[in-house]
Image (cartoon, rainbow, N blue to C red):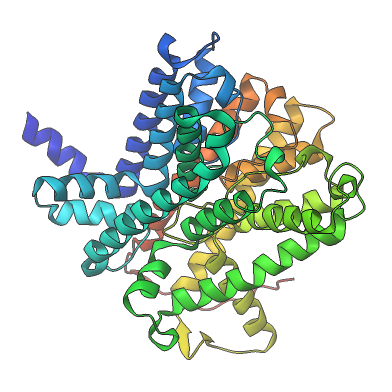
Length: 444
């Protein structure tokens, strides 16, 4: 019986099994959050399930006040869910098996490859070691530095836990905070504005890039993926920071109410870099100009890097899409960058990912607009934030109906694990039995 069950499981595609495991983790987390010892005030099953989904998908959209409604136990459950969801279940499994001295096996490596969205089987162990080192080093240093901010205000125990929680949340690009208004109170704090962004930028750039930086330490030796990711990040960060400052500089509800130019620049820096991945805020997101909100939507849809804790269609996907567009207008038959060509199947995958993402976001917006009249921009912002697993909100999360919550939870889940399933079907090839004559289709 057991052998038949294992054979049945083995016949399922790895992405589907991983998606089921993520779903089980969400339900298990919801059960723990629903326990009386996890919250100070009564919460519904819907609250617990939404919060667990947001944590496992490292999104950060909240229907509860994390610091007020949840006990330390509840916050600890949340932190564990964030850590497991951010790094990936199979990464944790490999770490545990390695600590116990047990082999991972070919099947385990296959699942791990799908979980990390990585194509090289022989580099997985090295990648997992890099992940473990980066996580331990970054989260430990981040927590130690944040102690200087939170301990003087909250005392040793509470301040230490606040530092640890925010370090875990920041590195995993989750955006959860124990403060009701996010990090608005620390908008002028240089340490918070340095440590938190450093954590979510490192966590969101991707472990493949970090592995190249640790192991190769030379731009010439970096993979094409790492070069595209680093160049894309170097362009997007100044763009988002500069545009936020330009659009919000005179807004009396955001930057305009701050007298100090230095603080305005600090808020612009923090809010500009957090938008694509992390979801923390040091200003009132609901008071942003419509133009700024539209810019934020585009950045949230782009997201961070593959094999990272970030969401979205990913920076490399966006870059390849732009390169393909430029190549089309130049009538080029081959796509290339940094002296390396990009295969046609990769371009097709980019187009498929982009098309499916646009359809998913459009359907989500349609469902919410149909059930929540009069909130088009708020709805669009919420859906983009859910798909990009960002967590920023214009204050619309608390107004969601049961249908709205279910829709957002589905979008968060697909935004986190959907590319795994898509990658499986894209990687499945079947030799055509027939070849048809070419036809002409007029496009554009």
